[in-house]
Amino acid sequence: MTKPSPSKEAKYKDNIQRSLREMYQHMEKVAECIPEHVDEDDLTHEQIEAVGIITAIEEEWIVDPVHRAELSILKWEEEEL
Image (cartoon, rainbow, N blue to C red; front, side):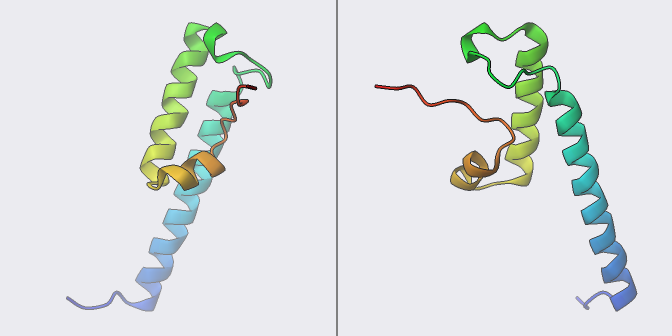
């Protein structure tokens, strides 16, 4: 196996960056239906679908669950004890 040429590697990196940008824009668009403060037990069907879509994308792109929780665009308030 040979290393790709510099021009091919640059194209690959450009495509990865473009894909990430587009995927993030898609996630933001999907998340528009989720208000900033919402009880996760009171989500509408549309909001449940949006959470599922965002979660699936984040699981694909951020493999480590700890990092994924830290970086997720979905932020759930922790329950107070």
